[in-house]
Image 1 (cartoon, rainbow, N blue to C red):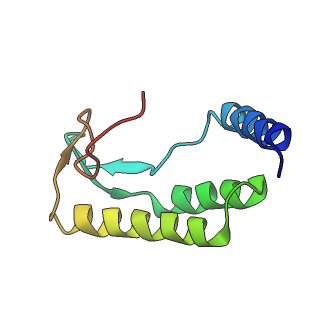
Image 2 (image 1 turned 120 degrees about the vertical axis):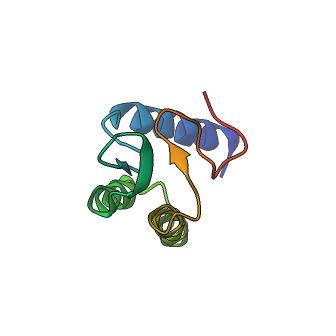
Length: 98
């Protein structure tokens, strides 16, 4: 792939990303008090994964890895191994993309 094709692909991906503003990465579920996240909304997560498939930008392996990350996060939160207060940065990451 030449540099022009790469550049066009990157532009296309940015346009795609801008078009899915309704997309919620790892949609979280809060407790009844709204103080802590207690899991991932797996139905919304499944819709996210369909968006990835339809975009044709992500490999099936990447989507499967993303799915496994969501399941792991969900399990850790539901089993109270990790606590994540609503409004705070995730305990699962050490950096953030503004």
